[in-house]
Length: 269
Length: 171
Image 1 (cartoon, rainbow over the protein chains, first blue to last red):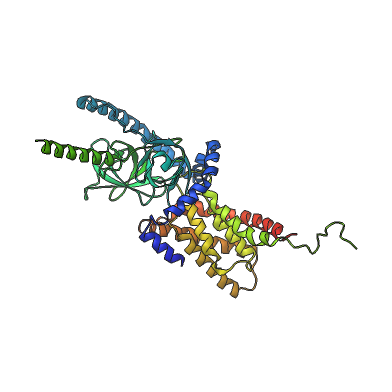
Image 2 (cartoon, one colour):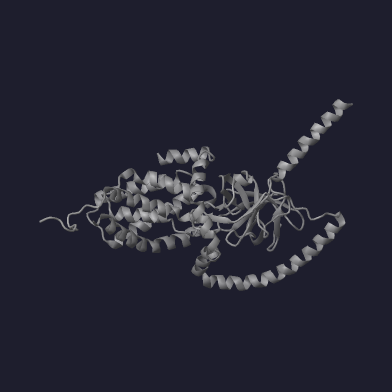
């Protein structure tokens, strides 16, 4: 019987979302009031995990520190390059309007799924698919919404694939979550593995869900076929998340408008 | 002799309390995900599972074999796992425990802990594989902190449940 339900939830993953939403809505008041206090608990998981591998982490951190020094230099160079290119293109910093800004109030910390609950829902105009970001980078996207809560599929969830590109040369790739705060980055071009440690991956905008240019991850390790990247927006430390409209929705609307105008022009002539 | 004050001997606690407390505590355990602990790592012990295992091992007679199903379903609603995953895994654990109960004559504390630990590891790994079999099959190291924490936490949960159980049946 349980297996049957499981099968159903595989075939129709959205079918039970109403039930889950009710669950999230029911406990939202607890989560919300607790998260007001809970700045301190935000990184509790991290701290416990750190305790378990403190020694190896210390050694790793020493190595990382060296690595980050060079990364900072690289980042400075990139920033300069970016400014230069922007100057060339005469691009203004253009951020799409945000729909809502809210706290992440809880997460599925006991499950292998990486979902978080956001403190706003469809009452504030949220819809499934909308990207969620923080100042640090991409957090995830809205999976399902209730009236005052919304489930966010985090970038690091194993079922979340984000189209990304390398910031330096817009090399396209896909970032798939690994369930532990890292992503598996696979380049679209098979056969070459051009990544190196410290590469910054940003959203490419392909697929139309995320607007391009949101930082996603930094490459920490090369693998045989791609690279492992650490997600920049650690949901445990994100104080406020910003929900943005679906990137493509605007494009689609624009295209529709254009075609209507075309038709009107043609009929006018 | 008229009962001037109520004797504590022979008084029955309300049936509601006897019947309702165990499932209620399991549901509250499942709701642990409502705490504002946000991680990008599965670290929080599955409290619903720990509580139901403690109850099951303390009071084998109380539980029907199918009890894992409805309570697992409620756990799924809060845990974010695909609906039916805990319902399935908890049912499986209950069936296994039932067969174990038929075979074994008596158990001691250490055996209980061993059984609970095995069940926890089974459910956590099972849950991970249900989420994504293909990419998770070689990545069990991810679960090690959570499994360790759950296994170490189990005796405390069992203590707590024992105390609640005493209060439940006490008049």
